[in-house]
Amino acid sequence: MADSAMTAQSGAAHAGVLEHSPFGIRTPKLAMWLFIMADAATFGAILFAYGYLRVGAANWTRPFAFFPSILNGIVMTVVLLTSSLTMLTAVVAAQRGRVAACVRWMGVTALLGAAFAVLHLREWFKMFHEGWSPSTNPLGGPAQFGATFFGITGLHLLHVTCGVIAIAVIALLVRRGRLTAAAVETTGLYWHFVDLVWMFVFPLVYLMNAR
Amino acid sequence: MTASSESRHGPTMQVYVVVWIGSICLVGAEVLLAYAHLRTPVLLATLLALAVLEAGAALLFFMHLKYERPTLFWSLIPALIFVLVMMDHLWPDALRLWSLRAP
Image (tube, rainbow over all chains, first blue to last red; front, side, top):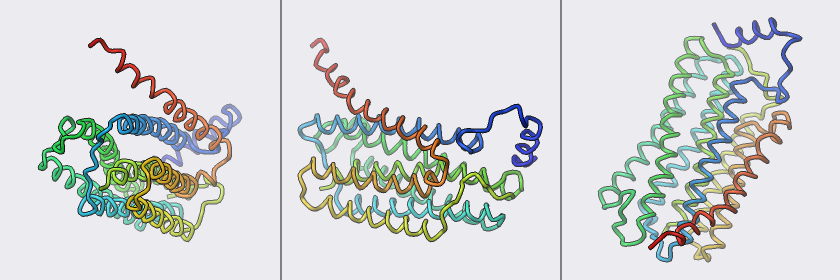
């Protein structure tokens, strides 16, 4: 049963019993907002930890040359920002009842997310090949660089991967008529949050370590 | 598929595209600043300010927070800012513990 129909039934059955939401949004969307706030605090914690370690180390490593690392980071940023725009296009299409367009734009978003992950993994493997790891620094600086870099970008990459999977599953269910525009909008919230986190990771982890 | 009427008045695609272009321009500015030979604290403050601008635009327009009821904004954002500020204040204590370790 479509969740809008379920909500309507539930609302009719409990009319006059349940209070109206003070936020004026459905429970799944509120739950997503609460998850996003908790996740933002998690990313805030690891970025603060990185900041203090960086300030506390006298000989902090700055390994990223413009080519290829920073250029790769710029491309990744543009890809992720563009995926937010395609996700918004999918949400608008869903709200207008254009299922095929919605599924198509969600597919484009998932592909852009996958492209971001591939670019990121390519950079990781290049660094592994150069001797980097979470506990080793081939340039002789503090080993915490690897721990913080792979920790922060790894957690973000995990979010991107989960987002790509979620978008693909939601698109499939929307195409089968089992989910509505509200589900697409809630998924979009998560995806924009992943984009938002990268807006802090890129300048703090990449640009602050450019040489 | 039914239309969602939760957001009171959502922005148009034109607004989304303007925010997207603005965000890309801000990323370009960040990259230029990273190579402008600024002192590290100045660079950090500037990059953070630009990141907050980008994140604010994404929150307000992409995530529709500007178009939701104000109760949602006031319930979520001040609490998050409080948590982040407290982290910023309390992290030095975590580093102080290192100097308390037995040799």
